[in-house]
Image (tube, rainbow, N blue to C red; front, side, top):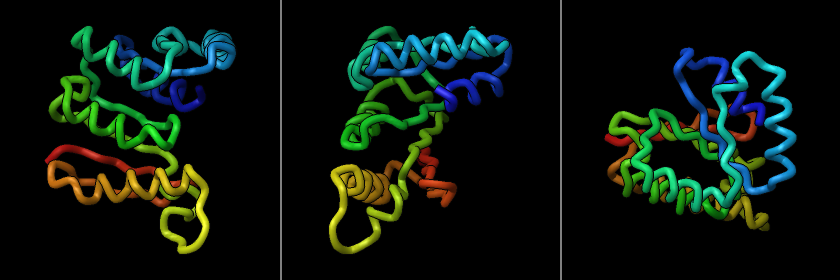
Length: 149
C-alpha cells in the first residue's frame, strides 16, 4: 500500500492509481490508511488475483503509463507477457518490477527459494526479449525499469 500511496502523491490532481490486492483484509486496511492522506482518493483498490484484475482492466480498454509489479513472484512473467500482448500498457508506458534482486538469489549458485527461482526466470525473460530494453537498479531488493523499444 505504501508504494501506491507514494505514487498517488506524485500524480497530478486528475491522476489515478489502480492497486491490485488479493487479500480483502489487507485491502480494507490499506484503504483506511489511504483516507489519512490527501492523495488517498486517487487510489482505487481492486480485490482479486492480479492477473484477473489485469484482464478486467484490459477488457474495459484501460491503459496505463506506468505499471508497478510487486505481486506474487511466480506471476511476474505472466504479468509481463499480458501487458505486452494487450493495450493495458500505453505505447510509451513503463513497467517497474520490484524485488528483481530478491536478496541475490537469482544470481547465486546453490539453493534458491521458489521466489528466487521465479525472479531469475523473470529477469532472464526480460533480458532476452528483443521487444524490450531494461535497467536493473540495485536499490534495496532491486527495481527493474522496462520499456518497449
